[in-house]
Image (cartoon, rainbow, N blue to C red; front, side):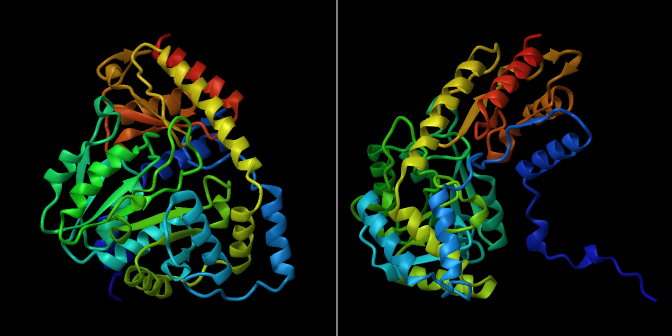
Length: 401
């Protein structure tokens, strides 16, 4: 009998994609908790709030009303029409409901968009720091990620001149995420207009605008780049219900784009999966059209937590934590700690620091190397004030004993 190794038949696509460090750190934290350690996890970007009651009630009612069958692949008409109204009212985007496709989460919307547009060798520009999933999807689609970096000195926002220098004849997409994961940075109208001018000069480039953190903003007004002159025809606007409505487990996202793009995305989705859950879609109509008191309460809670974490981290020698304009993350520069010996342990880099904080001090964070910035680490403040207060104490004691 011939010896068979299943590893030998894995595709080059899967080999090109590494396991996300976020998942690895979260899993390690869970394993340590299972072993009895008092671990505080600041890794996962998931609201610690339950979905608002009126949305849950709407899902229950939709099930009782018979919405338990297959939904149309691009989404229920009721939801797509509600989304068109939302985009018009809140984002100044004039889409027909036929130009919207609903998916099993915003991550699938991004995947649909990339697979619908990217051919082998096409270039996709990423603005680092960036959400780690973008790069993996691009590589699986055969595209080539082109990374332009913006550090703390740039407020984590690259200037349009840097974008222009990175664009070539092979550029197909630019992925923009505002508010940004992991930095919390937000692009204002003037900054977006400068980006738009660069993109509109290109013969075929489009933007994927990931706006999943739209409702979690503190200091600036959210602006959709598609609302700027000439950009709606060049933008795939992606959003979802996970963050703002605390609906992570419901897996519901959407994209709005020109008709041919939406049709191609629907084709991709129909090939890989199918339509999103029908009664979840009906509950999402209620989320959009119902009261927003819970959404505002969550935003205000995140704001108070942001201030607590930023103030606490900036009081620690060697850590610089800029105040994020949105999201529930703080992206802190810890590079001044590199090369130092802390409690007989030498810190060589950010991965080393994060592992040490978890293994010795039982605080789980995510190294910035996962997002394209090896000087920083990401802290999620989507957890209780008590957890955050204790985590800051542990980090302070670890770094400045």
